[in-house]
Image (cartoon, rainbow, N blue to C red; front, side, top):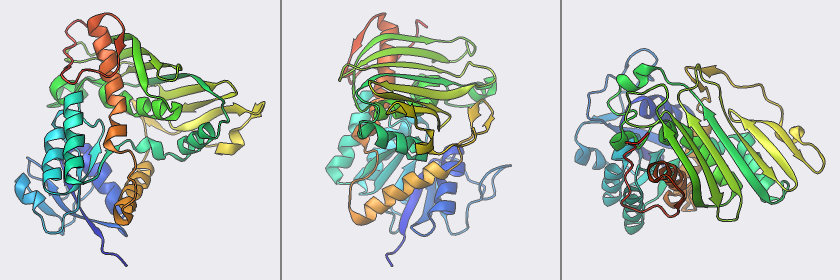
Length: 364
């Protein structure tokens, strides 16, 4: 049996501790060993209420160079604030270490491209954590689309109607701040379903025909709590995007994909409608009860993280293609930057987005 892959985690907030670390320990203990954690702040191994405990065998570091030099470290998970991802990705690449980066890959095109190029030069893997792609219903829908069951895709409509309490922004050092969060409702929350719908549609963006970004409820943040975009894709299909953390108390995340031969609707990760071959196709997916909704968002659990991490680490072991490589994982971020730019410019925006574009969102 092959030795377990030694893994580290950079950043240890909610995502690092209670998502990445917990998923690795509970779901991949046969394949990986979490060997080290880096964070600027001291870590309490037991943590606060609801925190997943950190094993005594895990080395804790405050010095990044020492962390990256941990004996046998082969891969790291970057879970810091979004606008800091590039620095840690590049440092890991220089040390010859593979990277899983939590979404988004980065907050500007320049930083995303620098991250991708650093990993390419050093021959290490870079994958972006869009775990919702590993939802069984979503994967079945992807297969159905690729098999042509929906015909040619005509349109996609995506909505993330969520809510965040004021403290989510006011008590955070980075939420809603453009430099570190890259935006707000769209770049942080809506990005998962933006990634899903463009991946399912199978086409890259060509133009943002209309972009709107506003502060409707959380008027004290730098970025948006509501955004809307109308896009034309490279194959001629149309995509509509609506995201917000202003929808009390939190409604749902959903998308519709419609083709010339059928359609499907997904709500909070579950296919709720499906039609092709002139009949209902819900039996193809299996009927599932709606997920719980709490704290302004659906509760998805860690199953999709575990499936994604396992595919990544099995690919590392077998030296095969990794899931969601950096070049693919950057698309959703660039779509969002296009919506922001269309808001700022007051008109249509073509892709690719300029590498030096940094959102200001002063006119929202």
